[in-house]
View 1 (cartoon, rainbow, N blue to C red):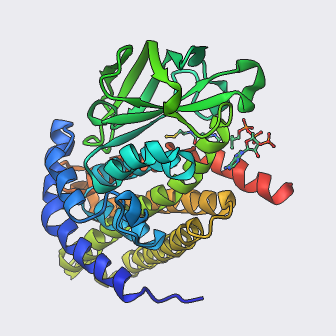
View 2: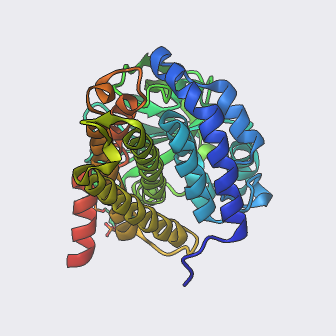
Length: 378
Ligand code: COS
């Protein structure tokens, strides 16, 4: 057990921290205003080997460990939460291929996704099926050497820009969680179309979309894993993704804390800087404690990703705590900024909006509590 980052992890952290501050943070303002997907930034992330940082080199990844992946997400989120969300959405999009894809699918799609030549998306949520993921009404019906998909997905990250989506559909509705299957659907497949884009409160550059399947024919060779094993696969992928959302929380919280410290040192009230008032100091101390606790829970959950054993509880603990810690930290940072914190010219206003999704996507905080308590009581 070692609480010190390795040299590789520390170097990565420093390099990306600089990139986040100098390049991503200025761009974040514009992405938020324009609700624009940052294609140029995604190419830069690929150039820095981040698109598949913790996946094996034989599949186009960088072969680093999952703590490096958490550090990458944390630092990207430090500069731009929307860009970090695109990155985690990409990992979530192709992770099923890594866990259960055929060698043919891995060689073609996993390799391209890890190296950044292709962008991926995870296509599970529907208008009437979010937390209750098994209540999906998208169907896949066998037809010779293919399955025909019909249904509507929504809130799908990266969808319009993705080269492929891993879509989940019911192959046997009567079997519930044992009747769902995962399919790889390539961009341009007849019958799949991208519907309306969402106008979100925060992480606005990380566009999400409606995806429509209308008699969309997907070859049997594009099934990921086994028929009717898609629900468990989706849950495994989401467990692994939750460590990434926790890392986003750490990055956003650290950014807000740094802004609060800088502001407290320069803002003068009643003849002294804010930093010399005990009320402000106590807030900063609580924020730092939240950031540290979230970071170590996150790195711990991330480290379990590499063990291959199930870590649903630890991932849910990290996601729950980090998302709520980020909420507390950003809220206090905004309070320290006073009226300026409420204004769009200060980035804290955007962080306040960006943070909020962490308590909702990849399982709400309430779902994390179901997972954690379920593990304690089984
Ligand atoms: N890893 C592996 N298997 C899992 C699993 C996981 N994380 N979670 C559930 N399973 C398995 C269970 O072991 C069970 O298997 P058996 O029937 O063989 O025993 C099966 O899947 C069904 O599990 P369960 O009965 O717990 O399913 P529920 O429908 O009750 O749902 C929750 C469980 C609520 C935990 C799940 O639906 C969930 O996480 N929902 C949130 C989904 C989400 O995050 N959506 C956001 C989309 S991505 S932005």
